[in-house]
Image (tube, rainbow, N blue to C red; front, top):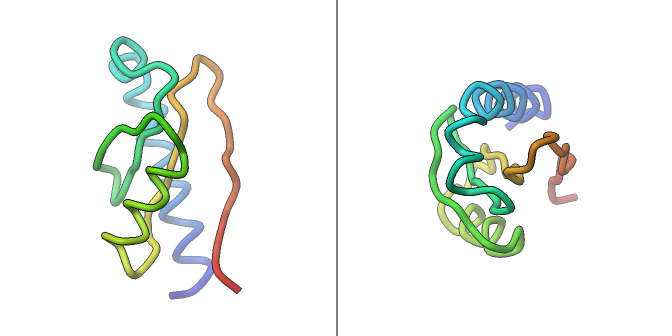
Length: 81
């Protein structure tokens, strides 16, 4: 998978996250949301739990994790070297 494809997935997921933020903020503030292909996969209390679940489920590493907070936080781009 190319870095460009991963970055496109991240960008699309982030745009989706922003479009859904009001609904997410009402019940999930402070939680981490796992996103894939502009869909919500799940909510987690810890970023480590979201990352572990994502790595087990998605071998292609095309997913994003975002914290539900009033100001969106860029958690960065993580890949294996």
